[in-house]
Length: 159
Ligand code: SF4
Image (cartoon, rainbow, N blue to C red; front, top):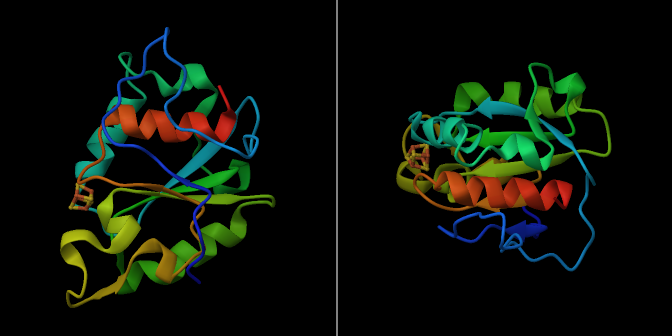
């Protein structure tokens, strides 16, 4: 299931109007202009959710780069997965991805989703998101800073 991510976000770089996105891409943006994301908490401590909320709050305002969180995977271009994948969330995560129309992507947000983080090997845990679904973008950090999340999401839209 593990495959090479499209890109891995850099840590802690501020996003400003003057500076272009520090996420560098050789390939064109997979969803030019706008990307709809369905968030799946696969077993998070909620730290990543706090930072995602900040990424969409006025300071970072990820929405200005064409990124939106949507309520249904059927309206989404990509999944935004947080947390290590617990045993009871593996099937819902797979089913949610199946509900996303193609072409689709998976963004692993936070060390838990990227590698298992502090919960790797714990009882009741299957592993990282890539142990269950194919991951295209990784955002490291525990939790990743809102700027890093915003940068990574800019990479989806190219804005
Ligand atoms: S990466 Fe850190 S903040 Fe995010 S879910 Fe794991 S332990 Fe919590």
